[in-house]
Amino acid sequence: MRAIITAFLMFSMTIPQTNAQIDKKQVASDLATAIDQAIERHKGEDSELRRKVIIRLIECGLVRGLLSGPMSAVASEIFIDVSKVVATGKLRLAEYKELVDVARKESTEMKKRGDQKEIFLLLRSCLTFGDVKNIDTAVAELVY
Image (cartoon, rainbow, N blue to C red; front, top):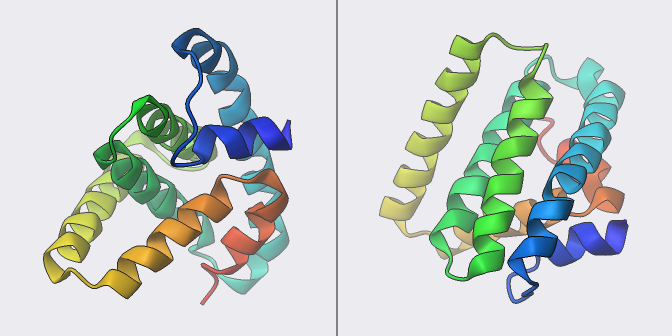
């Protein structure tokens, strides 16, 4: 399953749309489960960790949505779906919508600044969040 998740989130990967739709929910579920477990391991270190993770997932979805190609669109949807699953039962809908607004604002400001290092770090974080075996690292990087 790890290979499938990694393949879904690679920039250059292409697969038939029908396979993407069949596996998308499973990929999102696996990622969300791993993220919830990582948040539980690190939550004592940062009380706002879940919110930070959700914002990062939304940012990843937004950034991936800007890239061309069918896999970028699938990856974008998966990141947004995962952010919703991670928020379910933990945040009210209004709080989730606030985090979506924060992520959009941060992404827009990052684009305006044009800081290549900042963009690179975001993309690297997104790739880390897209691989189940690296989820703990991705979550830990948001603890500060």
